[in-house]
Length: 113
Length: 113
Image 1 (cartoon, chains in turn purple, cyan):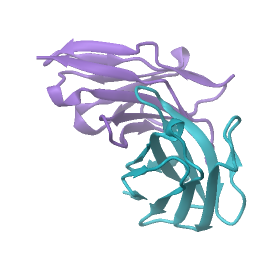
Image 2: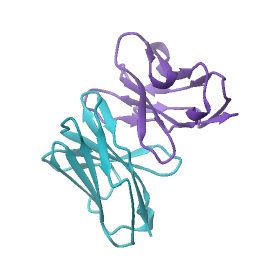
Image 3: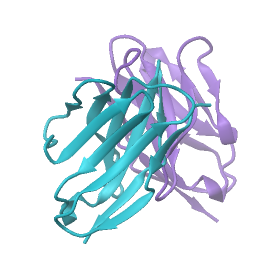
């Protein structure tokens, strides 16, 4: 079955430290890939997306993600986190154009001062 | 970028009453909109796909008579929670599709007392 896996439910990092959030998908072809962030009580904000081309994509707020076809992964990274980055992060895929989006279960990021 | 609005942003209603939530695409037309439900600390759960001019498609386990969806125009979809009960209390998020991307509304917090 098609799925999106975020293996880490919670991640805690110190402010200023680097961050990597993992995302794996199971599809035959390369889907359209997204990372969203959600602060408590808020809607979703798109951080970045990958459709094709350069496998390293830059997003907002200093985030980047790298698509690795061989590993079916689309991990999110940030070199130095800020306290304001504490939130829930969702990886998502759209298998084909106009398909419904499929979300991972999310990773909650905690930041230590 | 494309903007999707929801109204109201939060609502409190008494058990047994009905509540209508609106989802609007503000600067683009959307033939397809999606409705999601999100429980605390969980990912988004797709409830239904709303297609302009036709009946909505509901996901398995979602009661179509309880969650009425009307997609009356290319910029407006409504979700009506009928005979609401406390277990319907949740965060409801809509999205509008444009090609490969979905644009999410800010969500509506429903509390049923």
